[in-house]
Length: 638
Image (cartoon, rainbow, N blue to C red):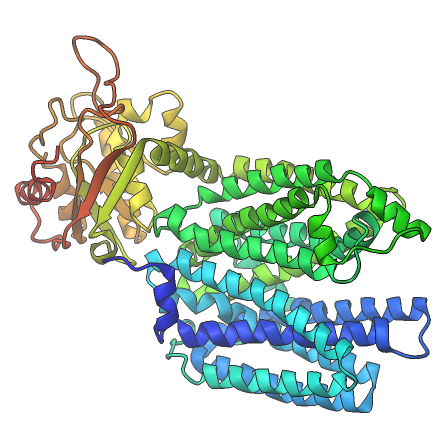
């Protein structure tokens, strides 16, 4: 029986890694925030310009290693066993934490900035392993849930670490001492957790690590070439970092200058955004039915734009209270006062929903990259992703400087521009890869029309390698229903007249369906179809087949045709029998011959079943035997 994602937190193959990576993100932000407050608030003898210089230098030094070392980190992650690499990285974190304590004791900003650079380098080393280890530890149907937990843990760690670091350094007389103890203790606990991470073998042990940063970076970026869906997923992830950087960087000034709040409102806004991302990330598994459902990506993009625009509409300019605070005639609102103020509920809800839809946007993209990338290059693809993320963050910072400076935009107007840009970029990405939009439309349609009970798919569809899926054929939505239930992409073979149905043809093309005709109708199309089927299986893909050769006319199962045997004679791959149950009589089953119309559904959101059986060896499978298995699976539930 399928378990939800939270069951992973009790399993050794995931829990120690989750704790180690979450504590790493937490420690990064404890130290960064302590350093920022030390520079901006507690440093004595520094003017405003010097404080700004040191703060900007700190941000630049933390992100610089992602440009310098990501490529080498990706190669290193491929070459060596990942659990041992994680332990080494966590040991390095302890050393860096000790150096941070020395820096706080010396009260030396240059020394502490050097430590921050090392912390960025350590995060750079961990980045490719962080996402590349998940496909080795998790089943395909667990990728979405596992990524959702990782994203939730990361953003909550950023939130809590930022608050905790700020409290330590600003609320205690010896804050530097307590911050030193904290970063060392967190690093040690993280290393202890890493000791329990199970072995994850090297995926490219013979890879030679290139020590030339520029050449290694170009080589790493080249791993995205020829992988269109992966490349556009990486660009989508980088866009999310661009979008998030623009929003998060402005929240402090937005809280004070636009909302009229004090310093306590800043972490509140950050908390709302982070909690939204966490909730959206965790919701992905439920909405996707434990598959890598990239149809959630357009949904996430739409929500980010809609509520980004609404955030501007909710407060298009500085509030009356903010103007009074600026004039000195009123005191700033604390977080309680802000929540009680008129209109604040809408702003709070917008921030939560922007984050929530952001979680729906980014989690499926990470899962898709992990699913569609060969294991032996995945760490380098993640490294390329990290390089592009860093570049997009830098560009976001530059754009914010231009728009808020020479262009004269206000912060709410910047939010509006960001939301509109998000819509433009989303439309562009979805036009390049129509599979995203296709899956979104299919996800909406199946969610609206059916309640689907999926059984046996996780256990019986192979996690990797070629396979043939055979199923009874009830209606025009069959391929899309099965595609939504099977964790891996499926190339469906379908009758060419169904393939050419207007509107649906675009969906089938985007899904990579293979049209086929009878030997008497179009022998050339039939020949090409069998060639494409064999080529897909040779590439290790799953091919879906409806061996009846057409839709059922009466709800029963027709005789399976021998084409399945021809496919297996050329390439004897495992065959997974599947059955669709309770679909006959639905809106998309065969037209009534007498009335010439679609059937009227018997009930709204009918409960249907999709069930899979144990794979049959390709050299032992026959059309008659597979038909009998499918009949048994379906039973009387036509």
